[in-house]
Amino acid sequence: MHGHAVVPLKDLARGKSRLAGALAEEKRAQLIRIMLGQVVHAAAAAPGIAEVSVLTADPALVPRGAQHLADSGEELNASLARAVHALAQSRAIAESGTDVLLIVAADLPFVTAEDIGSMIEASRGGGVVAAPDWKDCGTNALAFPLAARVLPTRFGPGSLAAHEAEARAARLPWSVVRRRGLAFDVDEPAQLAALAGVERFAFLETSSERAAVRDGRG
Image (cartoon, rainbow, N blue to C red; front, side, top):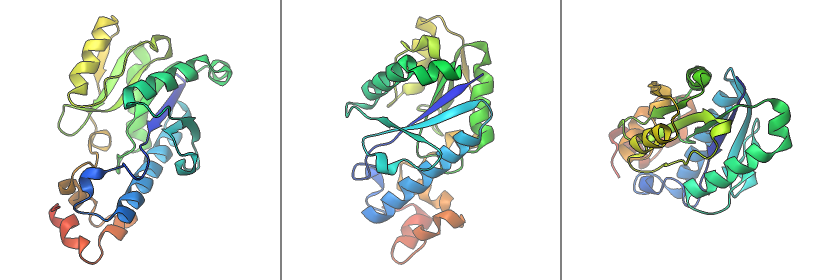
């Protein structure tokens, strides 16, 4: 299997707005960059992943180990549809033998190469594979065959069930991978508490923000 991982990323000004009550804008931007770096590093090191792209309007945000994929500026699923179509039509993809696309969230602070590799392994049957969020409702990663690029993505509230419905409508096998590194994303102040004591997130443990991070208050 040869997979291409796509990591969608909002611009820093709009990213993690739900954390605004707990973290200053500068700290939110730093958090976004560090989590993105972790996701890219894990994807690049994962078995079966040949290339990693970051879908963003700002190429300066793309960390080493990934290439830039231009964001059309539309709603997420529309931007992904354009990006997937462009990838599927590219000569580089054809020459690399890539046959699986993996879309993975940029806000997974504990994701590992093994987590990403488990998605590629599960996709060997040619079906659609989803990794749900910690609420078991959203989708933090989605893998599907490149040949099924017409499969619409439904990221947003209730996306896990929506992705299953799309897979079944396309008559593709459906499976779910549940791993902590893929499930734990950071969207709400209460989730910041899990980052306490982790060296790369030490910048969160400062001054007046310490209590908010520890207790998840906004």
